[in-house]
Length: 593
Image (cartoon, rainbow, N blue to C red; front, side):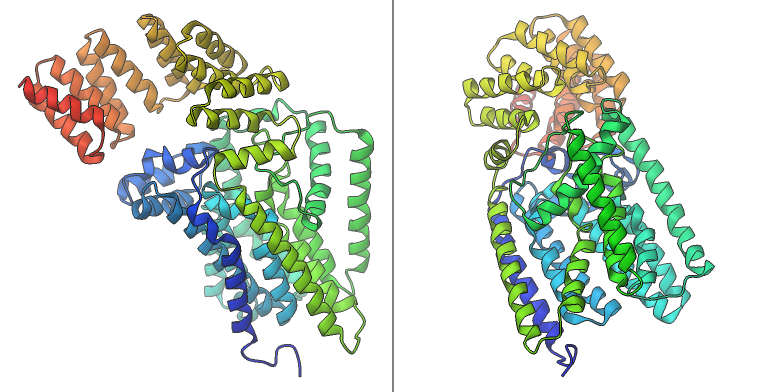
């Protein structure tokens, strides 16, 4: 009786995958948002707070917000916020459901392509349960990973249907799903390369000019996505670190990262949300050994590819799909990231699963032995993943763990200090900021955050110095200009403060905080017409910004237009009925009517 003979196997496997995955991830329902990107993507992203409407959809497709262009991801977060508001549990559970859906889809698509149910099941289980994938699921801001992978797998499904039928409708669906994937996360630019690999195995199409011609429309979409992404990241400053790390440094880190990811796949320990970039400190011996190992593995798999095609396909899948995020184009300050393995490791899982099927001798009890090994491996993976999920409970546990398992992690030390501030532990936070600066004295973010702490402690002049250092090390740091404005305004230096806002707007013409600051300064200086102008500009960008309505109301009241001021305060309260400042301003306006 063959492995595909039992008609209930797929259903049983699917149920087991769902149960095992949910068993790992159900605790995230009680987890908080993490300040590391969740604030930018959800909590403070007022563009999604109004719910799904024409304006939010238009924003999703036209904005390069957070240095990215992924409109479907923004629409997904918008729908979530409309359903769950700022309650993190719902956002987390949607991530889990997407991960479960991706797991089941991956199983069925691999099974459809290879006609091998148990190897496909192992690949899907490894995908579902591996600790390296926890980051993509437990982190709300990584919805883009889950959503793009959903369309990636559906693209492979549609392409398989096209290859089997050669009907044009399936090709069009392949192209459409691929475009939707790119609109979720541009990492899918390598999918045409993956489809070419699938042509070789398991679809086993004869090489012809047609195979290449079929990929041209997809490659055009990939090229367009690369251009849009680079422009968005360049405008957002995400690619600024290309200049900080030389090409040689980036190549060396990429080579070592390829091997490090493989090591973490087999032994997933000391996982962290952020791995500091080593810069030019990597030893030549380590780089050479990693490069040599990559070369030897590549030679071996290519040598074996005629008889065992899956070896070359799995290996090239891993190498190729990792290219956009391996660090050759440096985005951010990290050396590598667990989330980058979400779909890339599938190639290595394929090698492991199908090697076990092909290379282990046909013993009488072969299936029992393989089944036992798979269960032991996946059980260990499940336990490690469940432990990793616990680190994502809140900021303190996540950042604290990262500090423990990495060295000189000034980024996580900085974030840990900020979290301590929210806990009211100001002195301890100051010590962590100092520790972070001892590692990287020219970090603009740390100087900016330390300045904010000093402002809280009413040490205005010292805060001003750190804001100026932040700007020195990052001249396009609009948030630092905003904070410097605050320090200068506290000292009554209104003209200088206004200059900071103007500088911030020269960096980002849509920087709402700067317009609000100018409106506040104008109100302070009783230049109410200017305050109205700046408030309206802020509302053009963020129509639901209650602070802009409050500033507008103050300016209108200053001009004696009390009824209009009352309407502005009431609009702010309609958006956020619990806003104390709007309530107080409305009460005063009604009393002075």
